[in-house]
Length: 76
Image (cartoon, rainbow, N blue to C red):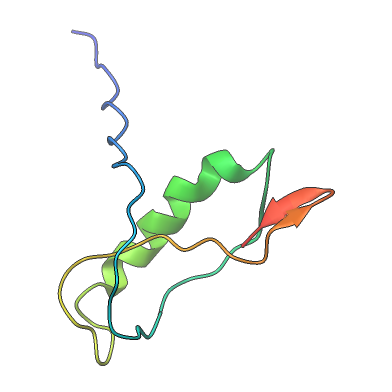
């Protein structure tokens, strides 16, 4: 019996929303073009905190990219 790997999760298209100010909480890691494929591991580390973050509103989680550098390419 062969074991097939689970399919990759489907990523929803980007969307923009008008909303009241948000407080962002999470884990931060620096990525490059070579390491961006390890982003799912950061989500794996973050999931245990969901529902335990002081002041958390709702059960939706978002990814946030910041501090973009173009040369050499990297971001948080």
